[in-house]
Amino acid sequence: MLDHIGVLRDDRPSSFDQWLERKLDGLTAGIRRDVEDWARLLHDGGPRSKPRDVHTVWGYLNRIRPVLPKWSNRYDHLREVTRDDVLGRLSTVHGSQRQHTLVALQSLFARAKKNGTIFKNPTSRIRVGRQENGVIQPLDPGHVQSAVTVVARPADRLILALAAVHAARPDAIRRLQLDDLDIGNRRLIIDGRVRPLGKLTLQLALAWLDYRRQRRPDTAGPHLLINKQTALETGPISGVSVSAALRGQTATPERLRVDRQLEEALVHGPDPLHLAEVFGLAEKTAMRYADSARALLAQAAELSTSPTGKELGPA
Image (cartoon, rainbow, N blue to C red):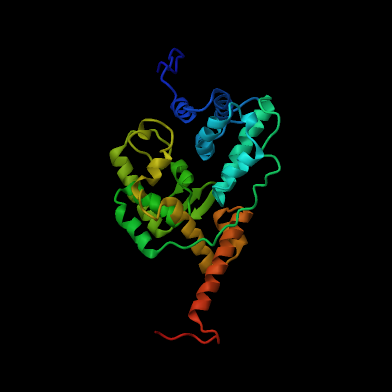
């Protein structure tokens, strides 16, 4: 109420400020200044840049944090860091970790050069390279069964179905509105795409709605999924709430989503156009699922036949 009438002064320390202070601890003043300016620009945005998601800022700084104390022991400023220093750091990581580390370092040094605190960008002309994606592997049925066994609450059962049956992303699950669920026409709208509401999902949705009415009958929350905190507000549940019931399981909501899309490619054929139409996947993502399905089907065919093409009998 005080905030609504404009008289609240919230002087609590920001959790981001506290986190950033811990990450900058132990760095020399020159390096600390540039890193802090860069991190705050990512977080808060600027005249020509939009603020990034806080998870992106965490990921960027955590990726390069291990090398910053080492550079602080040798240098007073980032302008003293050489190309060999950057390559030395990159040689300690591989695959996607190398790519993410280089992208973060390029972002940091680009910001420092724009501010005029360095004269030459040591990351220039170092290629990120193309990430080679491996074959997506299906979940083991035992892992799926384990996930089904541990979920007990109506909300968690519905979350599992939305991920495992409809391949809904965790963020899409938490943003679902009551209006997205059309019981009469047995339809569900996920991220703007209309999906048929099968018997299983319908039963779980009805069970959750009944539970929701009993426990939170007076809530004004417009979202399909609510908890005791969001029932008093109008915002969605957190991403942590979506994955809490399956924490520690191999079959997480995100992994179940991936497995559902891979299953579609295996059952209906590795057709990227079909996958894009059903799940709204981007072209490259749909092609990756199709390539993985094609590789898995070829592997299964090789295992089921002998070199002469005859089916192998039981051992």
